[in-house]
Image (cartoon, rainbow, N blue to C red; front, side, top):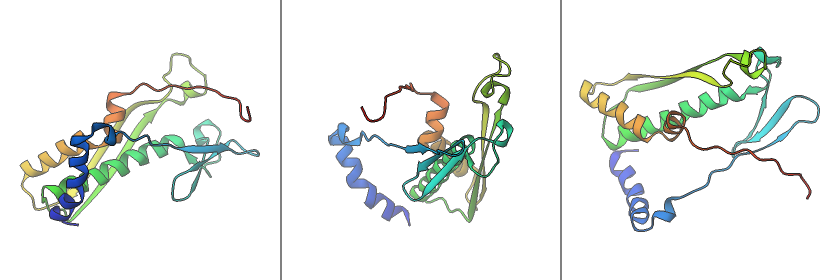
Length: 171
C-alpha cells in the first residue's frame, strides 16, 4: 500500500469522525472461557482460539500461552502496524523492520510469596530495528509518531481505569 491509497481509505473516515465525534467511539471486546480439566482459559481471538495458561514460573507446563507474553505480543503487533502505517503515510521507505518487546516480572508477587513484590510488569521495553535509507531526522519522526499513535503503547504508558466485577452465570 502506498501513501495515496492509505490517505484515500482514511480520508472519509477522518471526515466522518470530525463531523461526529461519537462515531469514533468503539468498544473492543475479548471473551474467553475457563478449561474444566486444567488451569487454562480459551480466548477467542477473532481468527482462532488461543489457550492461555500459567507461565512455567508459576507452575504451568508451558504448553499454553502466557497472558504476559500475549500482552507483549499485542504491544509488538500494535507498534508494528503503527510503524508501518506512519512510514507509509510519510513515504519513509523501509526495507525491513522488526519489533521486540520484553518485560520484567517478579513472580513472587503473583504467587503471593512476598506481599511487597509487585504483581505485574515492573518495566517493559520496546525496540525497533529498521533498515531504511531515510535520513535520521525522518526516522526520528517515524518513532515519535509511532509512539504517539500506538494504541497499546499509549494505554500501557498512561494507564487507564480498569474495573473488575463478578456476575453469576445463568441468572
